[in-house]
Length: 298
Image 1 (cartoon, helix red, strand yellow):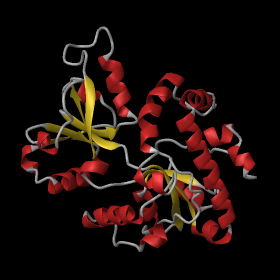
Image 2 (tube, one colour; image 1 turned 60 degrees about the vertical axis):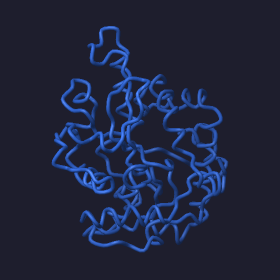
Image 3 (cartoon, one colour; image 1 turned 135 degrees about the vertical axis):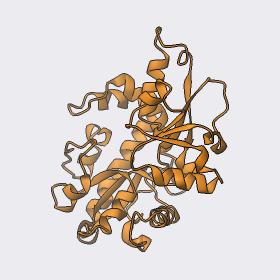
C-alpha cells in the first residue's frame, strides 16, 4: 500500500491495483489463473504446497516481507518477567488451532519435552482463552493477537489476573523451524517470460518497505487512509513497532530487503515432509528465487 501511495509502482511503469484479500481468501488460485500477477501468502509453505497439490499450481516465491515468521507460543506475564522457555510448557494447558499439532510436536522434539505433560486445547485464533484463564499458552502471531492482550490488560476495569500484565512469547522461527511469512509470489510463466516486470515490481516493494522503516508515522496514516484498510491508525502504529523489526535481518543487511535464504526454504520443506504435510521435498530452485531482488540493504 505504501509503495502504491508514494508512487513507487508508477515510477517503475506499473499500474498497480490491490485486490481484496484477507482471511479465508487464498491468493494462490487468483494468481495462478492470471487474475493477478503477484500475491502474498501468510506462510512460505503455501507456495510449495501449491506446487505439490494434486492439481499443481506453478507458483514461485520471489521475496519475503518478513524475515522471521511471527507465529509464536504466547503467554501472559508481568512486564519484568523473563521470556518463557520451552520447558515452561510442561504442566501447562496449551491452546492451539486445529492445524497446529505439527508445530507443537516439532517444538517438543527439538527441546526434549514430554508431550504427555502438556494438555492441549483446540481454540480459535484469538487471545480470549488466554485472557479468561482457560489456557496458559496459545498459538498466534505477535503482530496480531497480542494487540488484544495489551488492550484488555490496560482497561481500568480489567480483572485482577489481567491488570498490569503483558505478553511474552517463544517464536517458532527461533525455537522451532525458521520460516518466512508474508511471502511474495508470482507464476513460473511470469518469471520466465517477463523477468523485467518481476524485477521492477520487487524494486517498488522494497522501496516501500524502506520508506516504512524511515517514516513509520507518515506511513501509518497513508495505510489507514486506504478504503480497504480495516485497522485504524492506532492499531497500525502498534503493529508497525513489531512488524518493522521483522523486515530486517543479517541477510537483509548483507543482501537487501526481501532476501530469502535457500537453506531456510529447505528446512521448511523438510519439516513439512517429516510431518507428512507434503508428499516429497522439491528442489529449492523450483520453489524460490532471489534473482530479481534490488539489493536495498537495511
